Every structure is written in C-alpha cells, then in structure tokens.
Image (cartoon, rainbow, N blue to C red; front, side, top):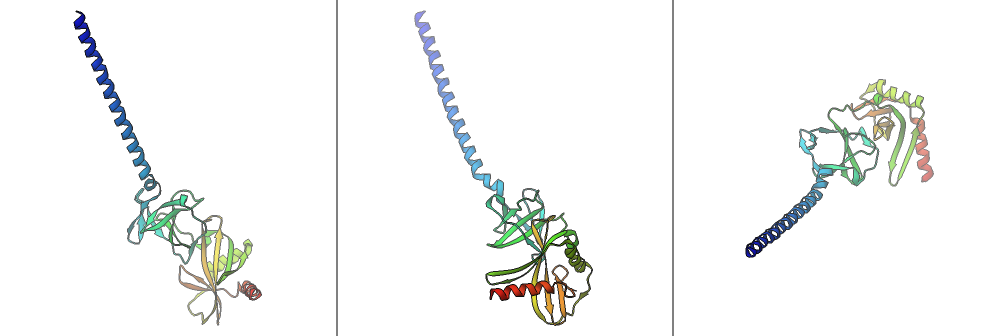
Length: 241
C-alpha cells in the first residue's frame, strides 16, 4: 500500500513538473510574440503616421488612406504663407514631402515641398479656391525683389484695399499694354485664408499702369492707382544704393 502511494505521489509530482514547464514555455512564447508585435508596430508606426505615398492620376493625387483627391493650386496666384516642421509631415508625392498646414483644421489643404524654399499648395477637389473678392483681403504688399534686399510697401487701410479689389474685379481689361518698363509683385493676405497669399502683378508700361491677373491671363487698367507706392519703393532702393 505504501509502495502504491509512493508511486502515485511520484506520478503527481511528475505531472506538476510537466505542467510547470509547459506554463513556463507558454509564457516565453507569449512574451516573445508580444515583443515581436511591439517592435512591428514601432516599425510601421511612421508609415501609418506620415509616410502615405500619394497616387498620381490625371494631374491630381489621391491620398491612399482616405481616397481623397488633391489638385495643385496655381503657384502664380496662390503662394504659401507659413512654415512647416517634421511634425506636420503627412506623406509623399513622387518623392516630395507633403505637409499638413499648421493651424488649419482637417485635410482640405496640403502643401508639397518641391525644393528647399519652394512649396506648392494642394486643395481637396471638393474645395473651391477663392476669387479675390471672396478672399477678404486684410493686407496688401507691393514689393520688388533684388539680390539680398526686399523692398516692400504695405497697405492695410480697408477703404483703400476695397478700392483695389473692386478695380481688379470690375476694371477694364485690355490686351494692348505697350512695352514693359517695370514690374512689381502684389501679395494679398487674409485672416480668412491665413495660410496663403493671393498674388497679382503691377506693371508699368509706355501706355500706363496695369494689374496682371495670373488666373485669367489678363491685364486690367490700373490708372496709376499704385504709382505713389512705386515711387516709395524706388526711394527705398535709392537710399540703400
């Protein structure tokens, strides 16, 4: 009887040891699998977060994460007015980095970096780009770029801004403007569209002064509206000479 009890005891101890080894083995397997899953998630997290590769189709790009289509805005008319950081990185378009825009909610607007200081604005296809009257300009800058120096005049008076916008919208268009003498850049800024500028040009020719609209490729008679600011720019340039 004692011998039988000893045999049963040994069998029970053997089973306990086998169960313990099985549990230890399962624990090791579970830990290893957990670590593998953890490192896999860490490895793919950047891709999930900001390495979407946009798909090119018919002049636009499709975001593979949501199927939205993005179109490029005309760089002559719409320029970016912000800075971008790695935290804003959203994906790539043909190898170029694509950023979300700081302070702009949603994904209706994106920015593609074409070069170190060259950015292109993209808009979701259901978004309508604003006209100059819809832009609600709060400031206007008239400037000329020269090597190392930027000469600029600012207009913030609402009455004056409204007059300029009204002329851009309703002014007389013409094709015959004469020979170019001087060209100045115009950038409108807006609180409504704080991430971009709306751009025109101010051209002085033998026949007078004109606004150039990049979207309609048309010249609008300016009737010398900005000539006073042009003279101020020239004085700035002369004073620096």
